[in-house]
Amino acid sequence: MEYNNCLICNKEKATKTNSHLIPSFMIAKVCSYDGSGKRDKEVMFTMTSYEDKVYVGAVPDTKLDELFNQEKLTDERINQELKNNTASKDYIFCPKCEANLSKYLETPYAEHYSKGKSIQSDIAYFFWLSIVWRMAVSRQFQFALPEDIESNLGECLNEYIESVANNQDVTPIIEKCKFSYRLLRCSSYLPNGLAYLGGRYKENTKILTLTLGDTILCANFDKQNTELPNDYTYLGLEDVIKSAPVNFGTDSQVCVNVENKAFEDAMKQMVKETAFKRLLNEKELADKIWNVVGLSGNMPDEIFQSFMERLYSEEEKQGDRKTAERYVQVFNETLESFGFIGL
Ligand SMILES: [Zn+2]
Image 1: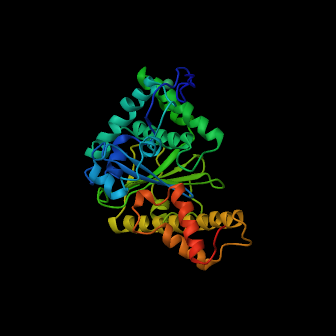
Image 2 (image 1 turned 60 degrees about the horizontal axis):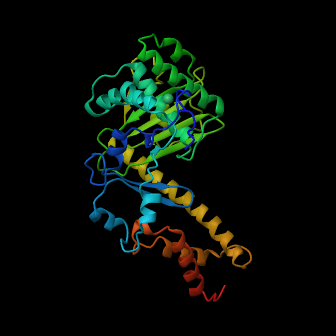
Image 3 (image 1 turned 180 degrees about the vertical axis):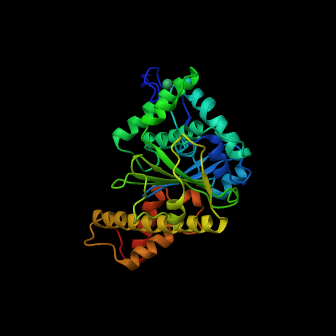
């Protein structure tokens, strides 16, 4: 097999499989199906424009049974989709860089995140920078950053790791790095609240806002102008985010605490917004297929509503609802129920 160069050092071959884009200690906290926060208990639903992709770690059959009709669950689907973790990716890093990320950034940050130990400002800074950069370059989270920002972040991360390994001063690297961030957390929210991984990047303002379980990170890529625009919104939390201090990696990290109720409301808002966007996408797709089968105009609202009710029926297990076969089958069933035969 031909390997690409490692995205961090650009020297060694990227032979490492299952590189975490978001560190496993955060994933475990967000996605453990029993709320235990332990590893290998993750169940993750990835919602893209049209599909729900499901990832399951080493979960027991009883949990699988809740999500899928196991009689219909093929080995092929398990191997191709269900073990394909959205929060990790193969062949992007070399083993050495992967180990360094863990040693210099993730391990110390995990101690801070889970046990409240104090954290050095530069470690916190490059920890968050590395997550933003990894999520962006992976293209697995529905956003990308402009090329100049992506390369600035990647280069700075590489230089930081080398400097720390050689006991050198990291200040000049922080100075030339474009990244700064506001950080908010609702530490009492997990493991019982509905949790999400994802976010949005606004191209005109170059502001990236991520939700990572109980944490919200608002990243900015112009240190000269860190003010958030007046029309900036994020799930009703915009005022808290706007008033949060900006971290530049030089002074101790400041993380603003968010009240449980406010965080919960924001996550509910996220569900609403995602569902609305999903519905628009579903309508667009249904209209296309409507035309493909030879019908003119758009699918009438009444038929579309019936189609959606069948497609997202509670009777079908969550993991089975959105397979391609089922989509076609439900589409045909719906049309037949409205008297369209033999299309
Ligand atoms: Zn490397």
